[in-house]
Length: 266
Image (cartoon, rainbow, N blue to C red):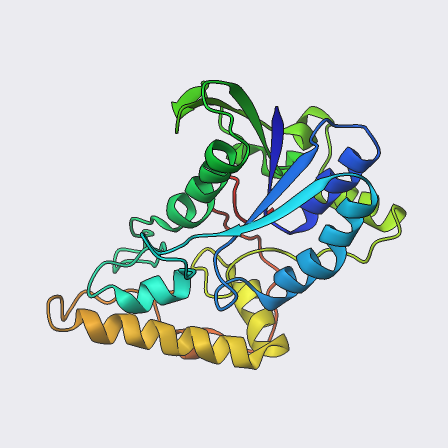
């Protein structure tokens, strides 16, 4: 069986249109929501208001799933997890040497949620499943060659259908528009340290409320680390400066530095 891991953005929406047109074979799409307080609201609105109805109209299952606390029915969010931890940080915040820190966000809030859905809800134990990721040709460096792996009792293979069709991001957006759908937004958590300089400027300009929340998050992380690592500050911005000092209002239009797994920014 083929499953598409939707990031809720341009490439994933184009893949949904292609699936509806019968050009790629993915009858099930799954969006792993990192949390209504974590994903950019534009992404959540688009998924719920555009992607889900479009999928239903075209006979495609579009499922939204979220991490739950162990042994409980309540959802767990990435933002909540950052605030809960005493020292470690699950996002790739930049260390004092400029390198992104170790992260677990994609594995814990994206990959494992998709794998759990396949194993428990689709009952595919012992069977082979192909998971499609929305990486286009202009991000081909993110398309890692991966051998099939056994996880949660099924064999998982990864495919990149947009690359197989030689589609870039601009072509993906055009596919969406040609289908009569509104342009899809970029997808990412609004506080993701992989944002480019221009993405941060755009957030501050267009969504000052979210930008301020990101500023407060960075301050909180450094405050709780002071007791054990007083000189080891971490930053959300690649300039290694406090976010509210690093981000101006003039756009720079530089490239986006992406997460390498292919489950985000798609």
